[in-house]
Image (cartoon, rainbow, N blue to C red; front, side, top):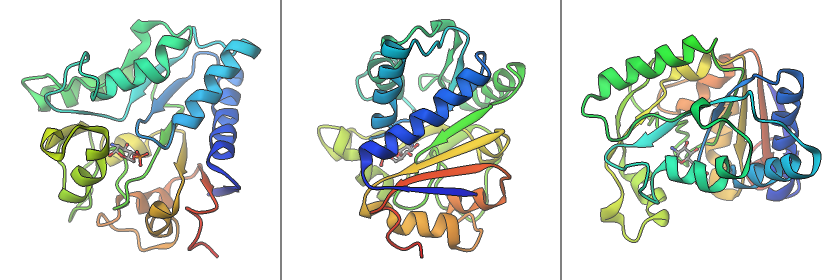
Length: 242
Ligand code: GLP
C-alpha cells in the first residue's frame, strides 16, 4: 500500500488525477471504476482540465460506477448518474455507450446486480478503481456489517450514512433508504485501487482502513489485503497515521 499525504484537498485531487491520467496514457482503453460524493470533485476538475489543455483522451475509456440510490432515475439531480454527467462525463469525450452505472430504477435488484457483474467481466475487469470512504469506513455503499458481501447487491443504508448524505438533499426524509452497490469482491478484483479522503471527519475511517483490524465492521479495512492500493489523502484525513 502506498500512502501519499498532501497539504490540501486541491493537491489531493491533482495527485489523483495524475494517477488516473497515467493509467489512460498507458492503456487508452482502460476500464475505470468511479465514485461520487464530494471527495472526488477536485480530481474530476483536474481531469477535465487535462482533457481540455493536454488532450487527455477518454474516447476508448469504459467506466463503471460503484453505486446508485434505489428509486432515483437518471434525471433526478440527486442520482449518482446525474452527478457523474454534470461533474464529469458531459465535459469529456467519453463515448456515452461506455458508461455504466447501476440502474436505481430496476424492479429486480438481484438481476441488476448479476447483470452488472457480467458487464464488468465482459469488459475484462476494472483496471483502476477510485474509492472514497464513508465516515463509518464504508466503501461504495458497503456498510459496516457482520460479513462482507461479495457481489453487486442491494444495501439498506444505515442512519449514519443517511445523515451524512442528507447534506446533498433538501431534507433528511428525501434521502433514499436503499442503494445498489458493487460488493467487496467486485472492488477487490480491480487491478489497482485508488483510495481518496480529505478532512478531519475522515481521519478515524482512514485509520481503521489502513491500520485497524480487517473486519466487515470497517469495510475499507479489507483493502489491506489488496496487492496494489494507492491512498491519496490530505493531512487532515491523515491525522491519526503516524
Ligand atoms: C457515499 C458514496 C461513497 C462515498 C462516500 C463518501 O455514501 N456511496 O462511494 O465514498 O459517500 O462521500 P463524500 O466524499 O461526500 O464524503
